[in-house]
Length: 144
Image 1: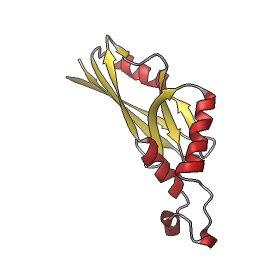
Image 2: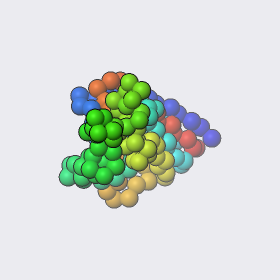
Image 3: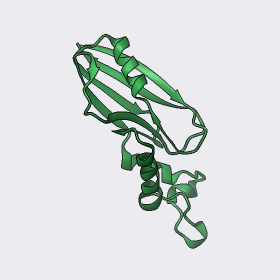
């Protein structure tokens, strides 16, 4: 079995962004020369995610709205006692930790005949939940 590793670095302009990284994953696969196997794509930070879904801006907004409205809203009120306990440590990103935990931090994608073996609308995304600073993603291609 052979292995190939590529790192991506993101420094987003906004605190939260969803970025399509499928082209970078495909480039790492091409560089590897691996024809059969799998690709692991993993966020190397606990306030970011990697996921597979559809490249559609309305869906991206739905995801952000769902995270804000249901999973982990940014605006909790310390004066009312409902702030995230994590934020009481001096951090302000408790919501980002919960968002990463909900969405997940990695995906494994099958490789067949030298290509990512996706369904018709699937793409790979980096979800940044506490950005505006450098963060990395590892792409690990494994196979023959």
